Image (cartoon, rainbow, N blue to C red; front, top):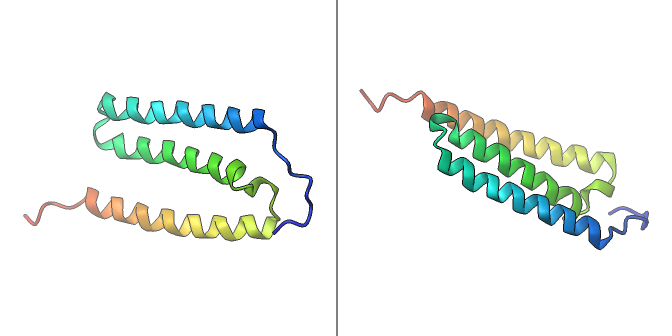
Length: 98
């Protein structure tokens, strides 16, 4: 927990972040309808990562936490990203058992 209490975020900031989240949600729907083929999942994951970053920074107040806490969270996220990436790699190169 951060000892410094000078991290009050105004309603305008919350409203701006919410608008960005709505725009990114619309981008997700548009990307799903465009038919990117095998890159559709990548587009969805990238947009979802941007949305998760906004939520982490502003709604969960990660922007005002200490560096060590941010580093621990980054390590957990990178570990999860590697596991998901290896899963996509495995599924992408399966030959269906033939």
